[in-house]
Amino acid sequence: MHAHHRFPPEGFPGRGRARGRAADAPPPVERAEVAGWFAGRLPDEWFTGPVELVIDRDEITVIGAVAEPDAGDGDPAAARAGRIARFREQTRSARMAIADAAQERYGRSVAWGASCGDVRELFTTLSVPVMTRLRQPERLVLDTLVDAGVARSRSEALAWAVRLVGQHTDDWLSQLREAMAAVEQVRAQGPRVD
Image 1 (tube, rainbow, N blue to C red):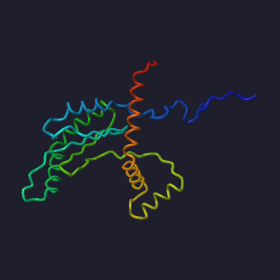
Image 2: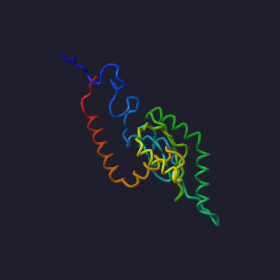
Image 3: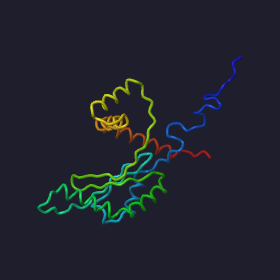
Image 4: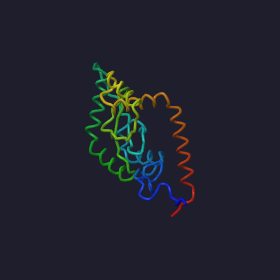
């Protein structure tokens, strides 16, 4: 007779863990709620309009447009870069206090950025290690990118490849994110099991 075994068996590393999202990942957040919270916390004089928010499981990136300087006879790009640098220096302590409050509320790190005209700069964004199990053909692709000077390391080559795929599949990824948001909304409306 065969013994009846549960899968995964007791002691198996996957037993009892959450599927899909990691068990220790912060809960999903409502984009509108996060946008509203930042709109209420950010000083009105910092940015010329609403901020751009990029939210993932690990980080919230806040990017705002700062007022364009009058470059006069100077280089407009240098003037814009200088305006962003001044914003970064003058708002550092206030931005860190807002970031701490947001991290406490949403369980995610906060990164900042600013744009001025066509100049855009991100400040200290999070670099999250990602577990990958690539087979030799995939590793050879990364090594080719490194050998060709496209990237300095396999990690940088993988990031480059992900960005490239993202650029060419924006519409599809947007549709996928919308569908996932709809699923999260329906799931949140369902019954609670205590």
